Amino acid sequence: MNRRVHQPGGFTSVELLLVLALSAVVLGGAVVIYGTLVRSQPSASSVVTVPLGLQRMQNFYGSSASTVNVAIAPQYGALSLAEELREQFVTDTLSATAVFCLPRDGMNTWRPSLIAHNPVLHDEIDTPQKFRAHIIANASVPADLYRDYRNPLNNSVAVPQNASIFVLGFSKWPGYLKVNAIYDIDLVRFTAATEPNGFHASVKRYADAVSAPSSPTLSHTGGYDVFYSPSVPNPTNSTQWATDGFAPLFITFERAARLALRETPTTIERFKRAAERPFYFIWWPDPAARHLGPVANTFASSDPRQAYNQMAGRTAFMFTVPMFPAL
Image 1 (cartoon, rainbow, N blue to C red):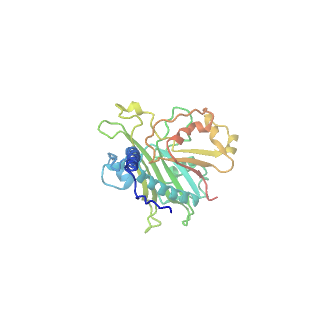
Image 2: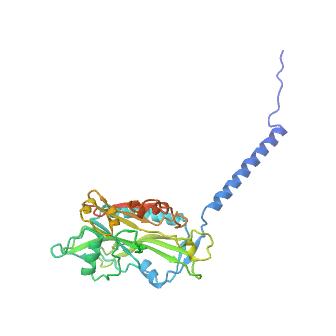
Image 3: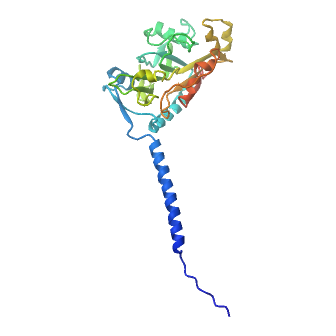
């Protein structure tokens, strides 16, 4: 008769020691990985006080303060606001009758809801340059508010650092163009020893207030801002990060049929690529980017990509927008 031998349950001391040793290794590795992840993430307290000044604060945000607290990039709270504004911009442009991008050097001080236009008396507005000429002639807009500028042309002319995007819609008012929204893109560079060195970048949307759909001036309805530190850690002077920047903010591709009109400088011809309708490439500052450092650009000067290839390495916010989306 076989007798069953009862084996006591549980682990032996050797097995327990082995399990404890393995657990220590796994937990130690987890602690190292967690520490690395925490150090690589931007701190929630990475905020800088930016001295924009009274005029910019009033113009940008309608604030009477002279400074603003801005998160230092990369900043994912600002990224969520940028994504929200991206969706609004796409919605605005899809329903637009025309989109005109105007470059500028200073602040945008003109945000109208309506623009006088008589199709019998006034010329056809089919380019940003004609739109600029129209508002100067018929809306008392100062000639130096927006630049008479037509893409980077490999010359000594400085590329504008700011831009305003006018989104026009269908008008219920005879004799007027309706401005559905204006998007202002501004980059302010700070280099003084008493200032936080870097760039304050912002995108703001202005539109009719809900309670006043026909107000004469558009109101600030949202946007985002972020501060980019220099690409050179702890620079001793601004020349060490002089090549940091964010330009061009947009490129205009004109109709290929305009090649029949030969123009100078000849480098403007490379942008006449649109088969039917003219369109833009538009870039916004990316809150997820760490800095606005230089990006290698190896395209030939005859290639239109040479004018904007560096933007691909600086932002993930890029739009392709027809000049006349609703047509």
